[in-house]
Image (cartoon, rainbow, N blue to C red):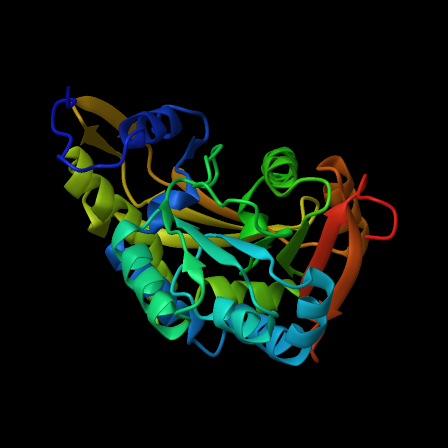
Length: 322
């Protein structure tokens, strides 16, 4: 039965996620809420901004090293992409891989997922495409894949940085179990750098990232019948050096009360909703995270500016000679 004020078609668990976060101290919202249709389109605009180096850096690595990644992945592999998005980066791997057997794009945005999966199927007619609409931050059940070859997971875009360290280890541990002892993970990782570069990337002068952040409240209004006034919140960014993370917040500009599905949520002036963390890694931190999830670093590729990594991780207990 649908909860009061919750729109039909709203994702399962959305109300629980929102109320749990907004009644916590400090108030939080999970980053997965960014990616409705509007949020996905705004993120594509963010990726084109001069200040947002991450996408360009990762694409440059994939273009230069796709052949090496393909050789390490092996022939006739099954490619599993967590957070497939617009499907731009995956083409670089699909073009380089030798006879990939299947592609499983996983994304929470159903409309974008269907559109991208159909386009990939047209462009690669011999490839078996199995789109899976799911919240990949939770355990997911893959579609039947038959007796295909090695499973290679692909998690680009530095999205691993959105997880707090313990959550990141748990998430990578689930990937480790999905790919098996002979699988591999190709992981995008943003590196530690000057905080001024990070601030510019997450608080662009054009205000696109601010609109992306505020769209979370617009989505909650639409899907949960809330009454957030977006004019009373503003986008804030800060860098926590000790934790090695950039944080995005929505700050209340006044004392106010907001109704969310019948529950009144009070805000003090200056109080924030913490919407995203993006952890930045050095090699020691990355090795520690990988080890906690049952992986080891097999190879790191960086861009010319040493801003970003694409990492090849393999299970610690992989067979000898793999």
